[in-house]
Length: 526
Image 1 (cartoon, rainbow, N blue to C red):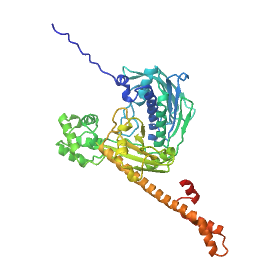
Image 2 (image 1 turned 90 degrees about the horizontal axis):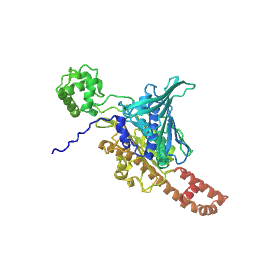
Image 3 (image 1 turned 120 degrees about the vertical axis):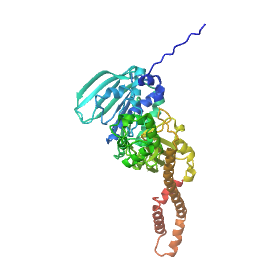
Image 4 (image 1 turned 180 degrees about the horizontal axis):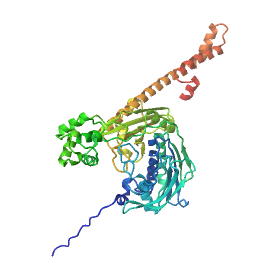
């Protein structure tokens, strides 16, 4: 007898079906993580809609229980911004079609995958059955648009349940998004508050208002009007292009010759460089880009990868913060006694430009801990999970000898690390930790050492001041006796007057060390 043969069935999944089945990949693994992730995704979109367009952000975040009973686990999350708004023809797909986004260009943005808000909508739809509500007023528009949407999971398309438009009666522009979802406030509370606090550190130019389900309202005030330079879209760099991307670019180009293609479609490639590349690849300059064989494309890619004379990519598509903004944010939220920051020059890995920034805060309102408190950011996004697997964690706790810089733990030390790039090497789709890329690791180490040297100088000066102050206290103890002795040999001078003058001279010396008086030192020592 012949054994029965089972016929395998082959089917395909749309992006929405895939992420419906694998919600944890995008950070929606459970009600606690989902509530945090929803706030994060909506706030990131709100900030991108404002600061990337030169608008000082005003972001309002609200989490409410749906039903009002304390045990209810259904919440509404509402985020409002004053950004550029979304044109009404794009709103349905922007919230109801996965992998549909305005971010698929070579320019730094907080989001990368076009999932974000759509995953929150999908998770909310699956757990509560309720649609997302979107209100948007595009900048310079006279209308306000309202949509109520669901996602057609099978076909990855938006379902419009309701839509309306109204005439504007004021000058408001921006977007309001309201998502209903199953959540766990008690478990996600600390993460959500920490996320907003770290957002306030990295974006001190933003005004953040948060209303939680317990009726508390927290306001993070704007502490500077200075904003980072908005990123600009740029062409790809030859070193960052692989075989498949090259094929797509060749198919889509309007250039009529291969020479024009290289000059027109890539940054840092001029006519002389393009001619050298084609000569080494053995390809004619006047070849039609649309008619290259697979063998020709492979030759071109191999030649580009080996070619050493292409300039590094420009970094004007990146939006770094700058030292002043980092220092302002650390001062405003942490209230330290010392703060320093550095923005490194642009560097490159695998053809992708990146910039590393590091801030360091010490003392003041910072609590002492057994190791440095690490604030990690990628493209201005706070990273709260998977800290132990992040490259910055390894560097801060293993590569840097803090004793050399005068720090012994427990100590009140905070280290901020920010990496901005169009290609952040995340370890997973959840985008919570950054891989150990040698070029990035090298830049982080150099930046931390630079700000740590500034802290070392500060602590050294502080110790010197304290030594002088302690000497002053010792001297001050003998001033009454010295005054009495001097009064005996100086005519018509009272001991009290001499004591007062001697103390005045001592305090004058202390002021050179930024110490107001001997009494202040005595209190400090006690």
